[in-house]
Structures are given as structure tokens and as C-alpha cells.
Image (tube, rainbow, N blue to C red; front, top):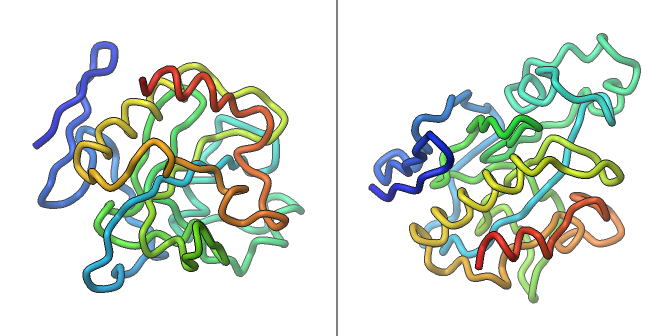
Length: 192
């Protein structure tokens, strides 16, 4: 097992289960096996809030778990039939929830391509940050994201610095997250 420390807690990646510990695991029904012999070599950073711009609720968790009450907000009708997940969600508080084992394919990228390859879900790890394109993310989120990425890079050495991208980078014109409010330079500084 690999260990990385953050503040007063320790994150561990269990190499048998490909789950972070001690992190709550809420298995998503929206996952499947990666293609045989795929090399995990990319991290995709996303931003999400449900409803848009509202934080601190459990709507994203319920969405990824297939339990979102789609009648609880008018905007949820547009996503009622979507089947979406991510490997991790990092909340505004810095708390992490895992939905899909890193060894499995989460359904986070959708129609996507990167450096001539399509189907980015096959070879990437998707990390959602609770946020929006136009509201600055919290420092606790950057620190947790940095710690998780450093741990993932040790576990999956094909994930290099230039293969940490935003959803907008792999689905240009279709997606904009994590958006202009995401400070890539700050994250790079934490990763150096």
C-alpha cells in the first residue's frame, strides 16, 4: 500500500481493491470493466454542482449513485435519464467520496478524445470537484486533489504531469468544466 499524509489524516490506496482508505465508498451502478490490458494514464478533473451553483447538499452523491430524486428541482429533469459517475468527488469541505474503484471504468468523460485516442473513460480516472465554472474552488479541494493525484501517480506511473487535464480538454465545445475559475497554476505548484 502507498500512503500519503494530508493534515491530520492519512490517505491510503488499497492496491487490491483500488479504493482510497479511509474514504467512504458509495458504489455507483454506472461503472463497468475497463478494456483488457488498458493502461491507466490520465486524470480528468471535472466540476459539478446540483442544482448548478448550489453546494453542501447530497444531490451529486445521489446522482452518481442512481438515487437522485429528479422531481426535487426543475433542472433535474434534463439529467433524469443520464447515467453518470466518477471515481471520486471532492466536496467544498475537502471531504472525499469514492464511487468507482480506480481499476474499473467510471462513466465521467462521455464522448471524448485526447492525443488521438477516443473513449477517455477507458484509460482515465475521473475526479469531480464540487463547484462551477465561475465560482473559485476551495483551497481544501486543491490540497485534496493534489494529494490524490500524487498518490495516483505513484500507483499508476503512466499518469504524467501533462496527462492531468480538465473535462473541457477532452470534450472541447461540449464541456467547459472545471472552468475558468479552476486555478491550474496553483494545482501545478502543489504537485511540484
